[in-house]
Amino acid sequence: MSGLTLELLLLQIVTGVALGSVFVLLAIGLSLIFGMLTIVNFAHGAFYMVGAYMGVFLYGLTKNFWICLVLVPLAVGTIGLVVERFLVRPLYGRNIDDPLLLTFGLGYVFIESIRILFGLNGIPFSTPAGLRGAVDIGIGYFPLYRLFLIGATGMLVLGLWLFIEKTKFGLIIRAGARDPEILKVLGIDVSKIWLLVFGIGTGIAGLSGILAAPLQAVTPEMGIPVLAEAFVVTVVGGMGSLIGAVTAGLMVGIVVAMTSLFMPEMAKVSIFLLMALVLLVRPQGLFGRAGLMG
Amino acid sequence: MLKIANLSAWYGHSHILQGISLEVKRGEIVTLIGRNGAGKTTTLRSIMGLVPKRQGSVVFDGAEILSEPAHKRFHRGLAYVPEERRIVPGLSVLENLRLGIIGSASRSKENERIDVIAETFPRLKQRLTQEAITMSGGEQQMLAIARAMMAEPQMILLDEPSEGIMPILVDEMFELFRTMKAAGTTIMLVEQNVELALGISDRAYIMDQGEIVYHDTAAALLADKAMQERYCAV
Ligand SMILES: Nc1ncnc2c1ncn2[C@@H]1O[C@H](COP(=O)(O)OP(=O)(O)OP(=O)(O)O)[C@@H](O)[C@H]1O
Ligand SMILES: [Mg+2]
Image (cartoon, rainbow over all chains, first blue to last red; front, side, top):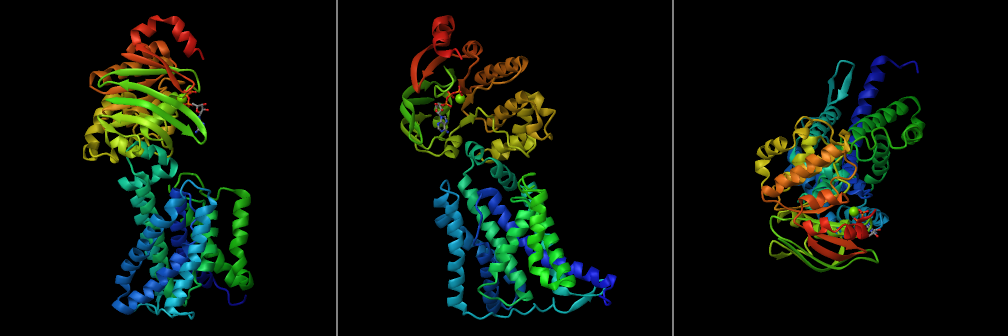
């Protein structure tokens, strides 16, 4: 540990925040869907993977990363809308295992379809021009793309928070997470709200996929480990809580970054240890039920 | 305004409403009374479209609504204040009120309606920013009624509004019902507070074991102590 300096430690923390940003994005979508529809979306990792491939495909067509950043969540969200409308909706009011099994199977259908369309091998996704290289952030040089990732996540979280707290639709979402029946009595077609929320949640999963693509190879299986991590984050933060997803996502990112530095062999296990620890102290997660999406 | 004929309703396999018929005319206050478990709440929920399995006829404002979902019934001008009030936790008084109009066609009149409602419900006016579930039971009941009135319904269904509320608020509330009637709102009231309810009603129905067993003018029933005791003793 002779080479360990304060700068290195701080840089590793920033690396953790960047890593955590992807977790935050994934957990937000998962948590939003759970908070409203009480459905645990096991296909969430697959939506993320589809987002990355959609990014590869649309980038090939447009050669413009920024356009892709807008189109990918729209396209993946649209797939989400179709899935909710025709596959998930018939299962409301049935056994809670049913949507779980459905989304679990659907995830594999997505993976298989992508294998058929794009092949088994990973596809590299190069860092977009303009976001390459590293910049001096005072404590050392840090990859520009990762800074961008942190900023983009921050903006999305802020936007979503404003949407949920300050708009009429957000008010309906907050109320619907607590009591869908009273919404019906007050003239609101709750099934439409659920449809939109599923679309938004999966759209954000798709966005995380394209955002994460330059950090790794795009493969059909890339969503599988990510799903487990997103679950950990959601459980640690508290199911259905936006602030919980953000806090826990950053925490998990930093823990992974730190253990990679000090005990690389523990990096994969550390987040599950963190989860066990949090659940022992607070079974409902850090912000669970404190106020859905609050 | 509302005409129910031969309405049956089920929860799972239990047959709760055994083919009831009743009518509420425009501008009336009609009270539905009966013992615990008689089926009063189930009747109101069926009128609102919240009981999944039902049969018979429910005509509101000239249209058959038996198979319409609840949110469409709201848009026809039917409002419902459930027994449990259903104030949404985590939301302020103002947000709960807004929920009463944002799903309606008159949502553009939101601010105007909030002002009117705040005048009608002075207790709420002072507490608009308070988290709604931290209010007293009576204040929450007032809020539930106010929320249902936000979109200016033609008819309102009220399930035991006076339950668990201090007497002074109950009087205030019943005074309010008179005002609502005078303003043209049709009211169907379920109450355990029989004398008070009959005092403001035009007519009344008595329910027992999922059937309507008696109906008359409120004045006649108010005078008929034997009838009241037979079906309404708790
Ligand atoms: N969700 C439900 N599932 C099954 N049975 C129900 C359900 N709700 C009510 N019941 C049954 O239906 C019958 C009528 O209940 P309902 O709530 O309509 O009575 P009520 O007249 O409103 O009684 P109370 O004065 O206690 O409010 C009761 O026997 C009750 O047990
Ligand atoms: Mg009842």
